[in-house]
Image (tube, rainbow over the protein chains, first blue to last red):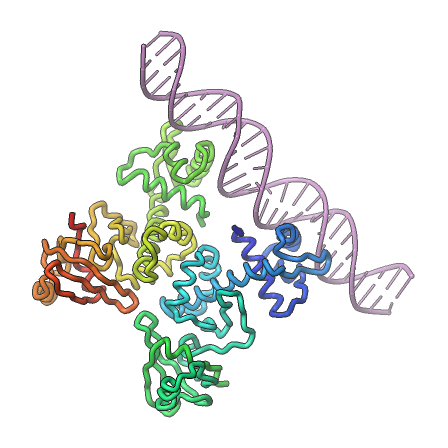
Amino acid sequence: MATIAVENYLKHVLLLSAGSDDLVSMGALASAVAVVPGTATTMVKALADEGLVEHQPRHGVRLTPEGRRLALNVLRKHRLVETFLVNVLKMDWAKVHAEAEQLEHAISDEVLDRLDALLGHPQTDPHGDPIPSRQGKLSSQVYATLATCVTDRGVRIVRITEQSPEFLQFAEQNGLQPGTTVRVTDRNVPAGLVTLKKSGGRALALSIVAAGKILVEPAR
Amino acid sequence: MATIAVENYLKHVLLLSAGSDDLVSMGALASAVAVVPGTATTMVKALADEGLVEHQPRHGVRLTPEGRRLALNVLRKHRLVETFLVNVLKMDWAKVHAEAEQLEHAISDEVLDRLDALLGHPQTDPHGDPIPSRQGKLSSQVYATLATCVTDRGVRIVRITEQSPEFLQFAEQNGLQPGTTVRVTDRNVPAGLVTLKKSGGRALALSIVAAGKILVEPAR
DNA sequence: GGCCTTATTTTGATTAGTCAAAATAAATCT
DNA sequence: AGATTTATTTTGACTAATCAAAATAAGGCC
């Protein structure tokens, strides 16, 4: 099993490569994991021996498919834990990153799956950063949903992902169509309830599951 | 901050001393933390230098007040995490110990407090093992409550801790008096609801908060 | 093209935690 | 009491991860 240090290096290579498969510079990696450059070199060589990264000496480092798989799993843990801390434990957003940094290395895949289900399989964390899927897919353009977006801020409905007529009708009857701007006033995950207000004024409650089907973006 | 290894040694000294302040033998400690005896000796000497344990060479080891404080905090984390995993994530009881073993070292005091509140400040984990209080008190004789006991097993009501007439009347009207045997059929922590059945047959739902005030013991 | 700056790699040490196996002390058993 | 068994400690060595500082390579600049 990968150690905590290994998981951290892999995660940061993934984050620094930002979708592309460019090489990540050693300097950038070293400062991301907060070690001196020499330490990063040593570790990267070890990771290369394990087949987790490809190291081009003097130029940089890139994940192998296996390394990417591990890195995505860590990132998934990080973002789901953050979502849990904010949505269920109501923690201050500013604090959760540091917490998740620890927990991401201690949580098993089984706990992860159950947490994912409890949260209603969110696609993004409350920041709007995409959560990698269990299968290791990471969308670069994903939207937050009413179940995951920031609260007390205007957000614009972009799309309704559930296509069943019943659901669309329900959405329409409550004025939840793409383009509408709403504001989530309360989110009670244990109770499975999201409360929101339309700019027009009316308050409306809907289930987390339903809220998760409504994609939103920040309303400028 | 104490490392994971340090936390583990302290926790096991606490568990092995079983309430008394007898010395814990090195052999017992070594096998509890799964290291060879020599390793335990080395570590214990280091802990003694830190003032966390008192080491009587060739005889054994005992926690100092400071070591005990740390050990109780780890144990509190362990048992609250187990309770969370079973009661909220519905995990198999058999698996949660190993999970908690990891998580107990990754969880912060703040997350711990919020978890504690979410679970309704349980006094015991689902095993009936007492959860140390935030202040580091560990009762040796504690009962589980309807909010924490095993499910689908007969348990006998021992005591109602809430003394307000309203609550006692409510309990009586529903046949929940000391001596009665009931069985918890479902516990939905997110919804804050406990469902139980009396041996006599009727199903009854009550809140987690109320359930937490009713002490039970295994019905033989 | 040679020089200078900057990034990267090497080298040598350090710390925490561990094991294997030898040495030592304590306890037990005739 | 003396011998033997058992528990504990010591010693020497190893691994993972790190830092400080010297050595090296690349890239840009006049």
